[in-house]
Amino acid sequence: MSAHRITAMITSALLATSLTLAACTDAPAPLDARPSPKEDGRISDARGISPFDTRHPAIRHLDADLLRGVRKAADKARRQGVEMFVTSGWRSVEYQRSLQERAVARYGSREQAERFVLSPEKSAHVRGEAVDIGPTDADDWLIRNGAEFGLCQTYANEMWHFELATRPGGECPPPKSDATAAH
Image (cartoon, rainbow, N blue to C red; front, side, top):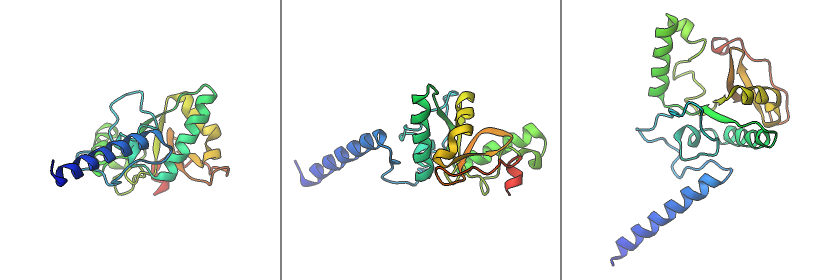
């Protein structure tokens, strides 16, 4: 067997091991933090996905501090009988743009749509700095307990949207009326 083939096999084994370990740890996983062109962050499961699923780009490309806070919150919520899922996390520019275009069609104008879906240039999801959480009982739990982890409900019209808006253990600022009030 050639040295090149052995090196390739070892590299492949190391990559598989690091991905497996990353999926089991509290740290964000990626060896390469940059999304591939085919990744958009879309979560097809209507229930959402575990904040520990670092194989999914919506989780893998989140800001490390945000992900750490969400995971700690999910652990504590689970111990209190509340299951928490990420229904949306990191999104690609293209995916965010498509969501905004659908919102424009639904609400009749870009101005009205931006109350719920910001442009890719303004969206915290595109930067990996926001998560949408579900189900509703998890949202309620996180609204009441999120400041312990630095997580705050950002917009009053979106009880599911959370960002790091305080230091862990701090006090959350009041939510803005909607996304347009933030920009």
